[in-house]
Length: 383
Image (cartoon, rainbow, N blue to C red; front, side, top):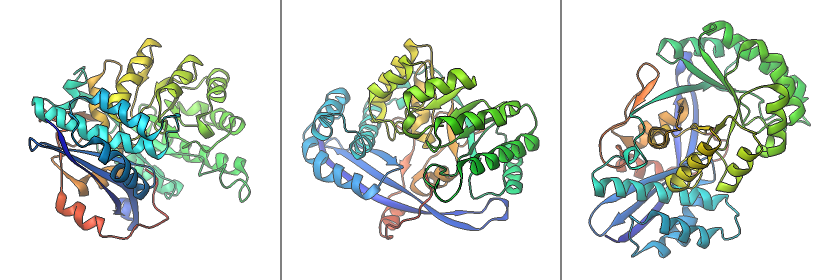
């Protein structure tokens, strides 16, 4: 079997938020990739949280010509080839995103060729994975945030994640960071009071705080029993994360935006994280994320899905023994519904993985073609 075609399509997917009586329009960027073989099997992949048009140019202009004629089942060989083609000095960035999307498509092909779902090819540790709902976005006011939390619990979710920090470091000249985290503390309290003591709450700063302010926020919300703090510090600063974990006694998670294995090595060796969060749509695909999971296992650390894209990441979390949580990100799931068919839905706080070969869901090509005609624009939601 040989690769005969590789294509990447940049997408800016329009979304409409209608929860809690809202009628808000936004969009999410993504890059959709397909790899076709001479046997007729076609695999598909996705990446996001980046500039989708740039990633598409990397795939179409650099990777695709180098992949034609390769055996798609040789995922390790192709991964190394693409690494040395696009980031030979460890640059990551756009190249890591592009490589992730292509790698996902290759594993989809592998599963279809062998008539097995990807989660079984990755190890088949479990067929059901726990999910947490990312529901608490910055555009909700406190009252809406509490109401949204109640709604997601009523829908069967026992684990909830909300954003904090409001891009505090980025806007520090416009608004004191302490003002932002004081408001965060009030918002977290509103959610806790809305859902009661038995629901798990996670918070995510999206790398928007420094060590001092992250520590202060943890101190303010300590009585509210937060299960983990995701990406508290800018640049996922290894030394700062380790210090925060030791001094504030809070469980930390990060890794969704890291492109290479060595970053996880450094985080684990420094005892800086309680959950490693490689994202298969960003962190070099399944091929590299399995390596990261193995490395984390050596430190007795679980891997968990951060950064959305649950229907790709559920395969990793189900496949490896130290897999755990999958993120049911409201906006990302709405994107999935537009681009794909055959998606499974969570029930009672869990996702049950399909037995269909490959990824287990397929692209809606008519919808993708229609969305691809829309202009790319700025001011989009964060994935």
